[in-house]
Length: 516
Image (cartoon, rainbow, N blue to C red):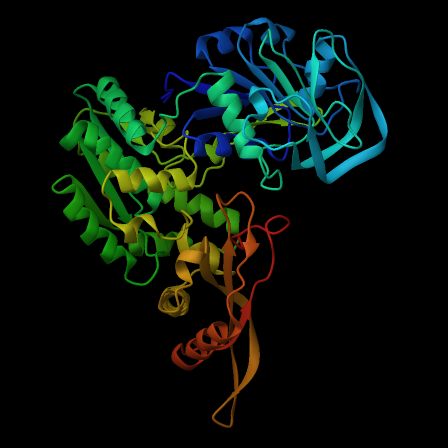
């Protein structure tokens, strides 16, 4: 569902690794922004009515044979445009300027010298540190443009045609290394695009609730509630719009963390009152997963079993026409591949993927334009408890993808105990809120140990903790050694069947956060 405020910035994606950073920075300035493929049609651009357009960076050069180029007419719409890096090349290319491969590649920090204190550089000093990443250089300034700033290697580091409100910068204002980057983007939004900073969690809730109410009418809606942040905030938004027309179904698949099923059922039965259904399907899931060790097969079985259980409950509710899903923006961002044009990647992290096709339900995805941190702010606006909003992400297949072998109740119970100790000590030592996601995995190996003068041959568990903003990239968390030692000692002493603990120090990429 689309929930555009009156003022919003359209970002055309040319494949830069920083494209998501642009939209995040703009949203931090309380202006809504959205990413679309570079070759979006003029009809769609006009229908979106953006207040401004940003052309992202990208790995190509405009003189390459298959270089991605947008419709030149976007620069004739009268809508303010900001070209960043490759976006600068596009502005140059369409206005008679010259671009060529540079003998002096500029990558990393550079000093920007501002020679024309235009609106774009208001409240920025004469010199500013910026981040460069390009191997091409302008050989000729485009017709009708004037220079705004330069660096030692880039005589045309920023330029503009003020009469057309078209601006271009060689550097990346969206990255934190560009010290005044946020100020520069803010100037583009407020002084050039005339955007008002009124996109807030409160305004999002108000607009989304009104839109859901109008769309649903008097129909009934169903939501598969996992207890995770995304599904809970999505359900709370829909409930605020339509009240008891919403029914939430929680399926206990036996693959959750220690005491989690009971806590979810208790918490949300109180929050969603009479329209909350809890289904005990533990035995069914364990039976279906018996002797299955392939991770993709596990996911398929869990997804299909969930659908059958969920569908059975949905059949009991009259006039259900809509299904709520907690899909987030990173799951649906359209990106541009290097040569092949735009490619849409949709990550199906949710148990209910595929339900609409089977059940003939229309989707309500109220969070599909938000990042995870924005979802948490919306949840806070809705009055949801902090212990729910601050929970670490948890995969749809649950502990099934954290056991590197076939699933048994004994292995699940062992892993639940290990995971519980890990999370408990992170909270006790004020580490939990510093970490994006922390969990334990049960490895398919055993190791020799010594306990009380006796030789042991028992399981190995791995601990994984990462820091991240949105889960798209992640670094391993630098948990202090004394805390890791405490966690390891407790696990080995308290969990029968484990005699070795290892800590994962991989980043994403190249590794993923989860092991399966």
